[in-house]
Structure formats: C-alpha cells, structure tokens
Length: 171
Figure (cartoon, rainbow, N blue to C red):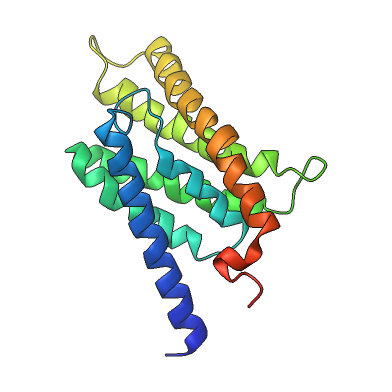
C-alpha cells in the first residue's frame, strides 16, 4: 500500500475517532441526541474543505457515535445525512462569498435538517407524521446544526486556513 493511501486511511480514522469522542462529550451535556442538538463534533465537517479523507472519516465517526443513540434508524439516516453533507461540502469547497465558504458550511445544516427532520417526523412524532411535524423537526435540527457550523465550524475553518501545518496540509 502506498504511503499516500496509508496517510488517507490514517487521517480518516483519526477524524472518525475525533467525531465519535466529541459527540460523546456533547452527549455528556445532553446535547448530542434528540431533535435539538449541539454536537461539537459537527464542527469537524469543515475538514471536508481541506481534504477528501474527511468524507469517510466523518461518515464512520457519525456511525460510531450514533450507536449510542440506541436507534437503528438513526444509524442509517443520521449517517446518510453526514455522508451527503460531507460530499457536498467537498464539492462546494471553492464556492465562496468573498473568502467565506458559506454554501459549503450550509450543507450539513440542509442535509441534517431534511433527513434527520424527516426521521423524527416519521418515527418519533406522536400522532403520526405530518408536514407540520416535519417542518418543526427539520427546523430544530437545522438550527442546532447552523449554530455549530457558524460558531465552532467557522472558528475551526479560519484556524486551519491560517495554520495549514496543523493538518500537514502542505504535503
């Protein structure tokens, strides 16, 4: 196996581990699971703007983190939302408003809002699924995601932009 492939796999594994650990830290404060979330780990989505290794890393990390939601549906839907967001973030990494990748940073907000909002509306709303239930659930999920991406995610983005050596991004 080439050193480039090993580096990619190791970097993905580290991202997966960090995502899981940061989600468990948020769970300690009751912020990781449920309709309103503030997962610190979601800030790691910005790594997609710097390396494609973040896509499998975030996806596997989300899968591992969602094991403790004790919800098999969330394993599939939540992990799918993360994969979709990561791919679109990577594809939109060069689309910027000024020097800010706002559209890319909105991908986790949109993906999680729709997919996890749909999951909550269909499987966890009393009285059954409804458009109103979906809109409320989607808004709650999206607002939590937006808060993380615009605070922690933006801070991490600028930190990595100014200090690329943190990730050895020059290699």
